[in-house]
Length: 370
Image (tube, rainbow, N blue to C red; front, side, top):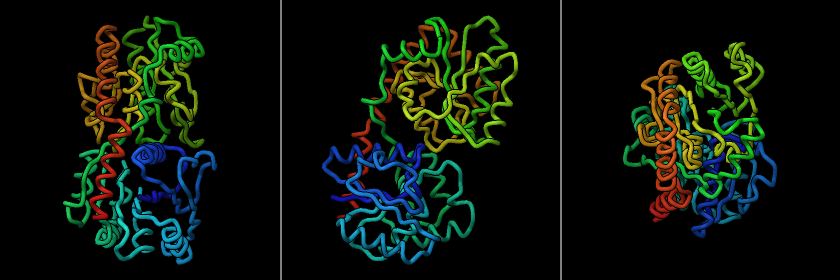
């Protein structure tokens, strides 16, 4: 079986991580994956090496006939059986390039924000394309209900498959923990809190910084530090950094974007996630797999990823004080934190394995082809 994964670009981010994990898992099932980017690759050739082939359409617009012909030709040349779109634009391009049956077509709805369902014309496009699409898959039940409630399509076509991660890459590593903490100058007794994400408001890095500072106000003598992994444009960066109070500037480290978060997660004692909304939260699964309890808010798909009271703690709302309350609770008892860490590892290994992820999608592919 040959599967073509279509997306706007293969630039760094959660969607790219999800596609890569699926392609790697499918390879273990004997399925070849190809990559098609509508606009640009946004990545180096070495970063696309796991795919059997790749193509960038460099489209000039939604109805670029030359791009549609290139897509059609690639599918015939490489005997593509399944077109797996990872956004609404790719779904539409696939349907226009392959308007009749013979090749299975499905779409994974990754969006946290409602950009692909907000306007009537978006929903109309989804309804028309949905006549050709055999399945729509979401990563969480929350996104499943959102998609059904905001689109005109047969609800039976929509299903949920949680994302998967490479559990060989994301796992506890005591030696790596010591090295990374030493690199940061963090002693064994220091509470090292991490937060990860781009600096857009939906990821709530500002809330994580605010909650950490509120925690320090409550516990002025606590040896604790916040490590921020992520980046934004100049305006976003200035906005996020403006949230740091001068008296806590030496307690908050901005480490920028890190291509290998698995080198950082084992060093953290807690992951503090301030997201105002979240379709799934891939970093939450990755952190738990490394034995890091999570503090986050009960929004979007997060309650399906983090088990409140078992693998972390969830605040009722994405606000500074409730998040600080949960951080305080998790950090108060080291034995309790270790218990949460153990349960987080077990949860991640059971729920988020790359192999389970690939098998679930392979079942969908076979059903559509049948």
